[in-house]
Length: 443
Image (cartoon, rainbow, N blue to C red; front, top):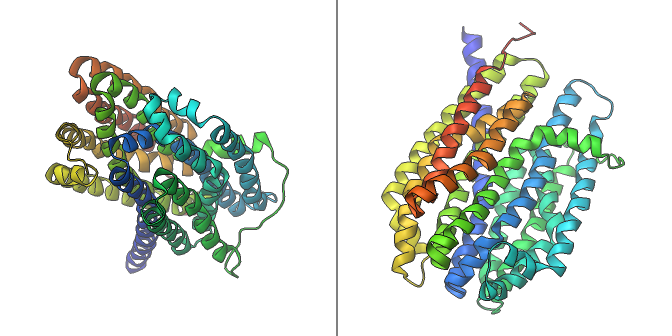
C-alpha cells in the first residue's frame, strides 16, 4: 500500500510539473495575440480590431498545421522508440521538411495576394487597406510558426517541459515588448505589430535549440526524404491538436460572416474581443492536454495502461476545475475585460462584447473536457473517436448551431452556438473515453 501511495504521489508530481509548465507556456503564447489586439485598438481603433479578427483564422490555420505535424510526429517518436522501431529517429527532420513545404505556400499567398485574402474573409475596402500589410508580413514567416510548434512539441516529448515553457514565454514576451516599440516609438502601426508577431517564433526556435544541443537531448536530426504517406500517418495522431487550433479559425470565419450581416463592423469588433479572450481559455486547456499527452503516450507505449487511466482522471479533473473558474471569472468581470480593448469607449461594442463573453464562455464547461479528451484519445491511438470529436467541435456542430441559433435568436444565437456545439461534442468524447480498454499487460 505504501509503495502504491508513493507511486501515486510521484505520478501526481510529474503530472503537475508537465501540466503547469505547459499551461503557463500556452497562455504565454496566446497573450501576444491579446497584446496585438490591445495595442492595435489603441493605435488604429475599431477598424484595426476588425482587420485583425478577419485575418486571425489564417494564423490559426498556419498554427494548426504546425501543431498537427509536430504533435503527431512527436507522439509517433515516443511510441515507436519504446517499441524499438529502427526509423523512429527520422520523425523530427521529416516534420520540419513538410512544414517548410506547406509553409512556403502560405508565404507566397501572403506576399502576392493579401488584399484578395482579406476581401475573401469579408473585409470591405477600408478594412483591406488597414490589414493588407499586416497580413503580408506575418504570412511571410509561416514556416517559422510551424517550425516553432514542431520544435516545442519534440522538446516537450523529450522530457524537457521547462525549456518548452521558456521558449513560449520568452517568444511571447519578445512579441509584447516589440509590439509597443515598433508601433509607438517607431510609429509603424499595424505593420509593427505584424513584424513583432512574425519574429517571435524565431526566438522560440532558438530557445528550443538549447535542449537540442544539450547532452540530455535524445531527439536526432536524421535526414529523411519527405513522404506523403508517413506525414499523413503522423497527422492521424495530431488531428486533435489540428482541430483544437483550427476550430478557432473556422468559428471566427463563420461568426464573422454571420455577425457582419447582423451587426456590421462593430459586431465583428465585439466578436474580436470575445474570440481573443477565448484564446487564453483555449490555451489553458491546450496546456493541460499537451502536458498530459507525453505522459499518456509514454505509459501507453510501455503498455502500462493503469497509469494511462490515472493520468486521464487527473487531466479531466483539472480541466473541469479550470473551466468552472473561467466561467465564474467572466461572469463577474466581463465589463472589465471588454474595457481593455475598447479604447474608443464605444457603448454598442461594449454591450455586444459583455453579453457575448458571458454566453460564449459557458461553452468552456464542455470544451475543456473535449480538448483534453481528444488529445488523450490520440495518445492511445483511438484516432476514430478523436477525429469524430474534433470534427464535430471544429466544423460540423459549430457551423450547424451558428446558422440555426442566429436565425432564431439573432446575435445572442451566435454566442450560444459555441456552448451548444461543445455540449454535443462532449457526448462523443466521453463515449470514446469510456471505450478505451485499460488492461495492464505488465501486471
